[in-house]
Length: 125
Image (cartoon, rainbow, N blue to C red):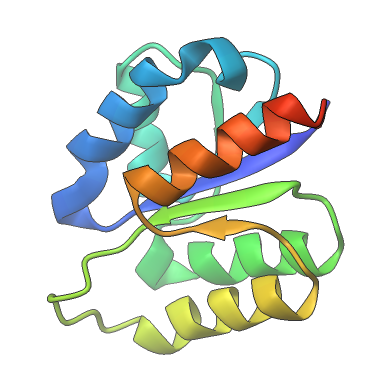
């Protein structure tokens, strides 16, 4: 089963859960991997998710490693572009790894929706 990583900064976690509900039909065909706190929110909403460490505790790096090892077909990362994040170097590293290994990366609901629709149309999910 293909895997999609989902990550959301604190202020965007409810938006991630809402996005998952809106795209449930497509997302039931993939395994969800999340950073720790995002995973907790997603699990409470009733989704099966494999949670890694919290982002600031190394979860972003764990997901980047999965991307580098081609274990992920996509990453959805709802970032807070206005907030300060102590683990920003890890966030930048994850984005660089996605670019380096050609892993689709969406950073907001609009791009994530287009990405999922495109993947579904191509039979990727």
